[in-house]
Length: 328
Ligand SMILES: Cc1cc2nc3c(=O)[nH]c(=O)nc-3n(C[C@H](O)[C@H](O)[C@H](O)COP(=O)(O)O)c2cc1C
Image 1 (cartoon, rainbow, N blue to C red):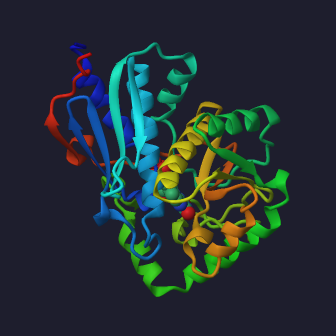
Image 2: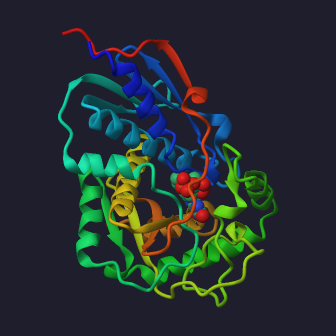
Image 3: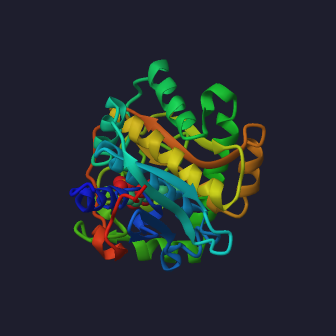
């Protein structure tokens, strides 16, 4: 029996809740039951307008699983993940079973440490190129979780996808329901444990950029600034689609984000074309030859911004029975 196991599990849950989620909704719940940690979708925190099917929420829960398992591993605990383990209950997204001991790698340690530095950077990035070596690391991070990362400038999808981002942004900017939902989750005080505070927003762009970050995440009280004109964009893909693929997609996304953080790269998301009705089908079709696209990331070099708060792990965790390593 590892006498430190309860502390390790606490630490792993603290890392899990550092995962990104749309509007920092944190749509997860955890149940600790001896050697099992269940990861549940919290339906009350799924965005009904932007994410009616709960797809982005499932990606977020997948990202939480990635952080959880990684943090168990760097503390010497080996676990096994079963995604969507019960067909009858589609909200039980993952089951993490503690199996025994392991020896973490240097890479595990680097990524686990990046959990506490990764954040969404909505500010302008520099025009410094992301070198091939860093791109290769990000691609192999996706591969390591069973997915694929496509750099849009390399695959000829750049113009088509950035046009979809702009179209979706325009659609959402004029959608009253979307605006009301965004208003509910943004503009909060800095110490608020969920939602996106204004100081995590970026400045408005002084001239329209190639891609539009969300206008709803602009801080109009700071002066407009030039944004990079050729942002590096990358898409996270899996071969399959469906509930399990969404959770897997979230695990892949988070490993890519942590790898980027460890490499000194800033990241943010472009989710408008997944969310807007007029663009979603076209976006999926644009990547169909590669698989199923889950998220679009903007990657580059920039000054770090502030980490934003989370609800404490204890608030979203139920302990049915104390963590334990299963008897052989
Ligand atoms: C699936 C998904 C989609 C997201 N889409 C956007 C987006 O389109 N624009 C944006 O500014 N942030 C987006 N975010 C980032 C969240 O707003 C961010 O993760 C959350 O506010 C927590 O902040 P942090 O990432 O800095 O920890 C997205 C996050 C996830 C997981």
